[in-house]
Image 1 (cartoon, rainbow, N blue to C red):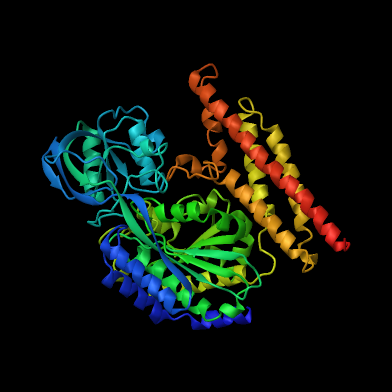
Image 2: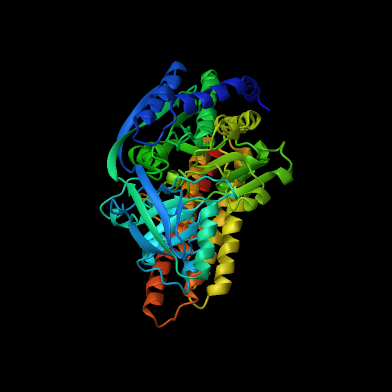
Length: 584
């Protein structure tokens, strides 16, 4: 452990962490983006960073937002019963008196769950989970012709309802993406109510009377942004962020993450002269209803800075959750080895390393910035018992209160963040390693080639990956013998490789845009090739086959182009390093 890290860990204060959690939830309980309370919270966070001597601004911008207003749900057939409910955000509001809908149960709301079911003009009943996330469930429902969606909560017999939003467009919409926002009625109900409705649906026809009201409007939001200036040895920086907006009271989503970020600001600011790189700290606004609006706005308006100088992005979200026991690190593959070393004191059975998917506020993936999101999390058995409640049955409900935060876990989470940040800020050579990531990509492509070779020739892609692995490894083999003059060249190389690999293997949208929020293809090992297995199920002489095949060929070309850029960079880097070694 370095002297700096030892000092940082010794200065993290449990009481300060909990004081911040209490302040955020007691002084600013209603932190939905666009509200006066959230604006006050943004001002408070900005002042906290200013008091630490950070360069600060509270950025203001407009985002396409929604405020859920009111709802009611009543079963009309085959029984009559009133159910508790909450309106979703970004919905088509019903008439003031409400509307009748036939209800159809479609399980998790994925495409496969609609097989054999006619939902046109009806309301679908879905079970809340992240497979797929709710905005994607809503998109699929619209594609299937549904007029409404009813979300039954996760958990078990808890009488709570999750707040939800249905806006599938990632960040602010454009003229092209605006029509993609689902236009349907949406409400949430408790799990017990949902289970009752599910049984009724299985037995026959179910009709519900639903009233759901929410607005859709442009509103101004405030986003605190502070910078801890290091000692100037490097002009690169680390991006640390935590979403500010939250459903009331929002203790573990996300006052605890805010507390982690502010405490890290405090201890890092006290040692700024010992930091070789800067730290940009942002409290995203518009994370919940506006679907990653703040992080998307930041990427759009700081594109060149992020692209040129950002070495990594760490998102502090839902730290300090009670009843958790497993260290979960969702991470870009090139940082996996570094993260394992940072978590070396955790036993294997308590460490869960996961490939980072494009979800949450991972708006930097188009640029290709490697990222991670770390928290102490529930065991898989606990999540399965709670029917997919990965952040607790109370997440996004009125029961996300102070008792759901564990001070000890919050402290541990903050300590682990400090270890990761310190390792990235003060290592002369960026700790990216691509062997494991490229090996995984090669295995996936080999599997797809074997399964789908009759439909799309992947031999050129297989060869391109082999060449890329060889050249990148040849450059990486020089890591341990780099001179001070060679290190900047090597760092620029690994940043560029990371940019290209992330863009072509972890996103679907092109680098200047954003994917649909929760887009089902992003769950595939290689999103750009997600439709290959679907192609194998289609009639080769049919229209759909031709449309899908054409897109897949273009997607493969995009991957090949990205790999060629990496290979060209590797050859040039090896040449430059050799010239510097020879003193030329």
